[in-house]
Image (cartoon, rainbow, N blue to C red):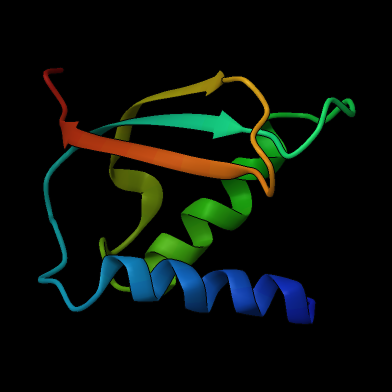
Length: 91
């Protein structure tokens, strides 16, 4: 069951991605996480919603295409943000 906040997040991700032809090659994904505050939080918790939202937006057929995944905690910023860098995998 996805909360209203989770559904809004997926809609926001889809708006950022826009209409694209789904990629079909192996990828490297680097995720910079800028938390909204200094509370303790697991970085892997960010990934599930993010990857599911990217999949739902049609950017890729499945997050199974990720060969190399890196998540980096950055400094806090008001409201928090996530920056995603995607490139073709070199493996």
